[in-house]
Amino acid sequence: MGRITLLIVKPIQSLLKMMGRGTSIPGSIAFKLNKNIFKYFKLPKITICVTGTTGKTSIAGSLTHMYKQAGYKVGHNLKGSNLLQGALSVLIDNAKLNGQIKVDVLVLELDERYVKYVFKYLHPNYFIISNLSRDQLARNGHFDVVFNEINNSITDDIHLVLNADDPIVGKFSLNHKGKNTFYGLAKTKLSTKSNTNSLDLTYCPICHSKLNFNYFHYGNLGDYSCPKGDFKRVKPDYEAKMIDEVSFKIGKDVIKMPNDALYNVYNLTACYALGKITGLDNKLIVDSLNSLSLNIKRVNTFKLDNIEGTLLLSKNETPVSYNQSLAYIKKQPEAKTVVLGFTRISGRYNLKDLSWLYDINFESLNDDSVKKIICVGPFANDLVVRLKLASIDTKKIITCFDSEKMLDTIKEKKVGKVYCMLYFDTEKILKKMLVKEGAQI
Image (cartoon, rainbow, N blue to C red):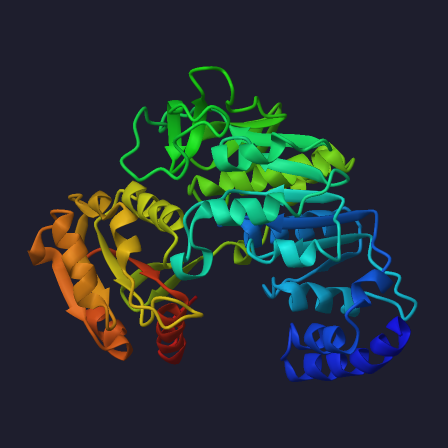
């Protein structure tokens, strides 16, 4: 039945590829035809799954680049189709009719809520968990719900690669009898003793005492320990140490980042760890990570006439990710205009819940280098209210309710360099306008 399913679906997949469509459609069709289709596939020895609230796309893309540089044939759900059907589509695309996967390495980025569905049928050799935090309240509810679903799906034959600095991720090792490898970041000059942002996990998962944090990097990430000694940050097997704002070292190996956003350290260190675990040469790992395409990250620069700008794709309802983008903007020393906006709150649901705005550190924009803040879209006034609560000078704030007019507003009102923190839909509108006017992106 598996062979027949592939004979039916593979031509459909080829046709959809020619049309530039349907990354998950072949998987949807195959699963309807054969509920046991996953069992038909013979996976490669290096099968990697990656999940987390943030970072999974960058990590999966970087891993793919790294193994290709090493001469491996790699299969990867590159277009971000990270649900059950998307994972199945990748298997179909890379399988012979006998079910043998014809690549050396399979890299699957998985949505954190869909790990339980994929792992019901497929067990990777290696599983990277980058972080877990509050995200998309209507879909995820509480982060404990997500943790429990993933934890209950993990079997002892899976080698876990865990972010040691995230106490929620650290919990996965407590009852796992298989292999655990930890990666993390040593204390930096930017680490802080206190955290102004809300924390996701503040109590020991064993004795429920309040955790002590020696320092924070950002969000919930840092050096933590239970006062009774029941739970603490594990000393990482692979620990990054900052050299300067755009480079770090692991042991004697030096890795340069595409920009000075701190989350890059975690993404690249996770890849370094897995490369070492799977036996890649040190020099090859470092060279490949230092030659990454800038397209892997969700940051783009543009230039139009006298406007120099940066696009930072911002995920609504994810405070940790949003705060990192704000921190990146604040670190840039020049005079700047910040553009904030979204035309819808969720990409999946018709939501009106804006409570997540109050978990975001907009107070960081209360800085002399921030000359103007342009709030774009139908929720512009909601952003204005939040900015006022952050004590931002109202003279700096400009509203643009029509997203189609945001480029005109930027041209007219901008001061200094422009940083655009926009949700997927709004960023798409701006990019379309920039391309139309001949901008360099």
